[in-house]
Length: 148
Image (cartoon, rainbow, N blue to C red; front, top):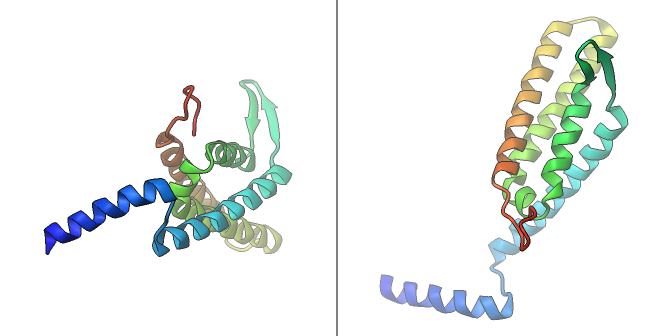
């Protein structure tokens, strides 16, 4: 039975190379990843509106939104591969970060649990940076050596 399945798998692989055929699972994943890419692009627009920087003795100091905007742009730059293969992790941390931003805004308005909200925001920022670093580290290259 295993030999028959192996043969069928090889035949399907060869056939799909010529026909661009996709399994139902591949189609479902591609659709979900397209939706996640859309969410990342919305996050990019959000961060773009909030990004800012200050100057100090060491030079330009970006705010958190600017840092994350840069990271999201880097992750999206290699679309579709880096984003598609890492989209679930990227989406999860971006949703967490956005929720932490909302919590932080509420805490700043009412003055309750500001320190906890800041700590949560910093934690989500660190997780977002790690997920983005993972996505960009696994970026395959196209012909000519540029990122895919």
